Image 1 (cartoon, helix red, strand yellow):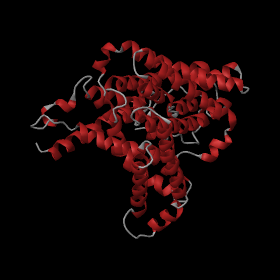
Image 2 (cartoon, rainbow, N blue to C red; image 1 turned 180 degrees about the vertical axis):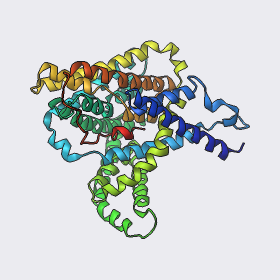
Image 3 (tube, helix red, strand yellow; image 1 turned 30 degrees about the vertical axis):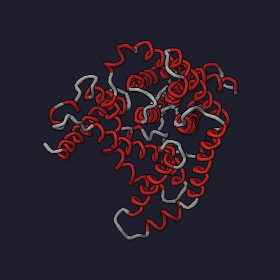
Image 4 (cartoon, helix red, strand yellow; image 1 turned 90 degrees about the vertical axis):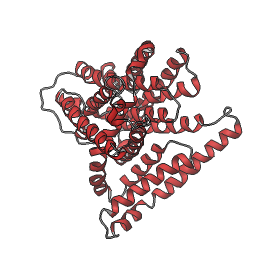
Length: 417
């Protein structure tokens, strides 16, 4: 079988498996991404080792994994672009200082504790330990929003803070990732000259990116007038990929940072609805399923045999640091003890951004497969416990569930697949 035919068959298996598993997961009250990760683990070296089957292995023993990784990278870039599109800067300002400091607590404490746990298990603090902490900073609020809607608490005081803090949390996480990636690439330590060079590249990139963002309205208007099929979407994709390339090549930060910035800038144009309508089908029909299933294809649960203690410690840290970091911040800013606990619980769930950061670290050799696999377990565990803990901490309400008005960074619940 030719390489092209192998790839066609593999993509068909991945997409069908992802959608079916996502649908089954949704029926069980879990987000679709939960099912997609599980089926990826089942198809990967943890269980079936699909890519090792003869039909997917070339004559020289090569596999399709590099192609899956490349497609996943494109999916990640588009996923972060959509995250930027759905970031409402005005809403971030409106939710107030409580959401900001709750998000800050939910970034600083997981970052420090994750790095500390890694160092305690013999991993180098710089940069693997800090990168592990960075993975733990992300929050996926899609499952939280769905649960709050079901129990009639989405528009409660705590629900509003959770939604706002989750958006701010991911922005802070992207900033942290940018610094970690930039400095992780320095060789021979970080001396003053190196520090100045790294910061100079980052400042130059972000400055040019912001200046370029001011032109996005005009660029989109010209693209709309090209008179060719999908001219607007084509030019938008070209800009997104250019921003992603420049972020890593010129700015020394992660490519996904550039894609996220492009999304934020395009979200402020009058063409946002049209861009949304085009980018979502392209991304969620193929590339996102390939990314989530690809996570499982790259992870190897069998390698956790010698790292069970580390995995359990990371899961515990992932849960406790969000509850404490976000909850304490809310408590200090006037929330009651129970209200603060609800805010902390609502921020536990990890998801797309955490997986994106972990995938980046694996692809660039910052973390190994064992840490990557443990990160997948963290996402699965926190996704499972969040709805349960929310239902335990929020009172039962008699009014019907509310409709989700704001879309979260991870997209609306039905688009998680």
